[in-house]
Image 1: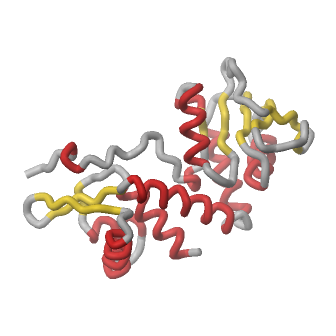
Image 2: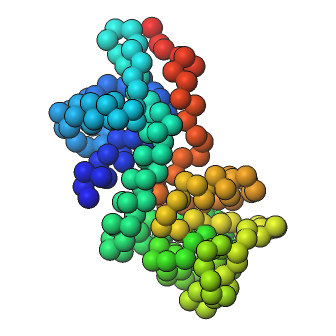
Amino acid sequence: MRNKNNELNFLSYLEDGKETTQKKISTNISVSIGFINALIKKFLNKGIIKIKQAPYKRFIYYLTPQGFSEKARLVNEYFNDSLFFFKSLRIEFNKLFSKDNCYGYYLYGTGEVCEIAILSAKENKKRIISIIDPSFKQKKYLDFKVLKEIPNNLENNKIIITTTSNQQTVFFKLKKKIKVDKILFIKSMCISIEKPTFDPSSIKIKE
């Protein structure tokens, strides 16, 4: 599971297509340069990343569309493998609630993460209005009403993503209907606000 986490951190770091070095990447995600070199070779061969050379032997590493999909897959695997890290997820939700000044929230997705979010909301005296889950068959989950669709009017409330699968897809779905500042998620989900452009010619290289 540790290798999956390192691979996820690696792809997340490269997502912006910034000029960097293997040393910077290794420092940022706390692994050896040798491990970074192995990941670069692995993901290049699979078509997950590409490299554009910059002046003075520098490089720009960026994700391909396949790389973006691979990142989303790793997030799902990591989340489903890591649900026993109850304390870690609870700390993240506590930070989310403590930093946000909204009072009412909808949770998108039933399951273990949703349950942790509910417990954290109670600790922080935040109100969970209801849960959104199109695939959930029951009318209630843990005494909360379950909605099939996103509310037409959130008013001053926000939505927190708590699904344990397809988090990125859910985010883009929500983004089409509501403002981005109304959508919240914890850092472990590694959700991207925008899709990568994948056009290396658009990357400005500093001389």
